[in-house]
Amino acid sequence: MSTELESELTQQVDRRRNFAIISHPDAGKTTLTEKLLLYGGAIHEAGSVKARRAQRKATSDWMAMEQQRGISITSTVLQFEYQNSHINLLDTPGHQDFSEDTYRTLAAADNAVMLIDAAKGLEPQTRKLFEVCKMRGIPIFTFVNKLDRPGREPLELLDEIEQELGLMTYAVNWPIGMGDRFKGVFDRNGRQIHLFERSAHGSREALENVLELGDSRVEELIEEELYYQLKDELELIEGVGPELDLDLVHQGKMTPVFFGSAMTNFGVELFLKYFLEYALKPTARQSTLGEISPTYPDFSGFVFKLQANMDPKHRDRVAFIRVCTGKFEKDMTVNHARTGKNVRLSRPQKLFAQERESIEYAYAGDVIGLNNPGVFAIGDTIYTGKKLEYEGIPYFSPELFAVLRNPNPSKFKQFQKGVSELREEGAVQIMYSVDEAKRDPILAAVGQLQLEVVQFRLLQEYGIETRLEPLPYSVARWVEGGWEALEKVGRLFNTTTVKDSMGRPVLLFRNEWNCQQLQQDHSELKLNNIAPVVS
Ligand code: G4P
Image (cartoon, rainbow, N blue to C red; front, side, top):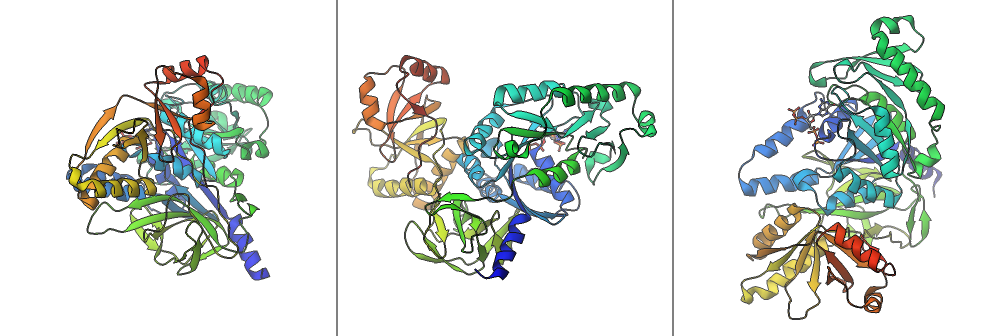
């Protein structure tokens, strides 16, 4: 490779950081995102992201709402610069938008920021998303939010993370007071106290007063009680807690923890500073050519998400590509590994909230949105140079199941076509009964929105009105060893066996308890909550 390209790639990869925020609704993801964008100069006044969200919520027309939701899902990537770092923040849809895309986005992320509400601690959606991060072994940074409100003791929260998630914790900063008495944080590495002044809803960068620990003014500025509490707690965590070990952080075994308040903007900049220092930059990925470095000279990437515009008048589809190696250039022609075709990548887009901006170049760690002429499927690899393929994206355990009925037999063909195309696109998983007489597909999803989207699109794009009949299951498990393994164990109770779109057996359970019971009764049966990837 030319040394010029080599140094360009090294330089660009070095300054790239890519992460997703994982959290439970209401923990403050929108607020934190907004504050990060504020520091990155991408927005000038907090409130812009929220205002858009409110606008979206306020739209009453169903069709328009779906359209907006569609767009809200495409507002997947926020790119901004901060102190010479180029940051890609991958948005993981939550709330009613929660879907398999939320999980798939994590397949494109190099780091995760786990955002926790200090009063609530770990919550269900955070745990689920954490499991996916753990499976991928990506580094996890924790931001404990809402310290300006009464919450749980910091030490107790660290303990919960250690006990329940099995992660070692290292507090990078330590809060001074909480609730009304929240004064700021102590930066353990810089050995400095950052005292904050509240501004209205933290709409601008917070004003900080930075003091050395031993500074005599500290005792004047914070109450004596808080000062001694800080000293005691520091003594404790520095005495018994582990040292920060970046290797363990990068292996996803230790989480650096930050305390703050996104709303009042306390501790956000410190978080950003250390996050950029400690986060993993784009690294080598496994491919059919072996481990491949992000500075490999040829361009390659994979599709992790597809998004169709809900508006039938604008049938554009966007394929989201995570760039893994080399340099992406607008209008370049690439090979499509699955089909062997050549594809010209025109109209590439960088996505910032709902505004689409055209881009010229992208490097490893970046995410680009491409208008998808219908050739891409989730997990597809595109490349230039020598052929290579990245590992696909697995199916994640669905929790909602419903039989999809087509009441109009004369439209059987369109129905089949629609269902199979939407499945290929990754909109929903499809399963079938093992009873050959029952041919109607079972939709399997992780979020309600997926079911709504399938029905809506079948109607809009294929002209088919469908009916959904919910099934009473909430847990799905793939059987290791397939049908053969299943036959060996004989009759099973409190479960229903179905097959996935590749004909593999899947066990459905009404609840987690039934699943655990079956595992206890048949420990020889290996069950997985994620389907193995077949490339
Ligand atoms: P989400 O995207 O994770 O769902 O959360 P979002 O940022 O929308 O925050 C949820 C609520 O929590 C919001 O209140 C938000 O203002 C509040 N919040 C976020 N960070 C903090 C914080 O550090 N401290 C405190 N006290 N509150 C915080 P809301 O009443 O729903 O909205 P709004 O009226 O404030 O806009």
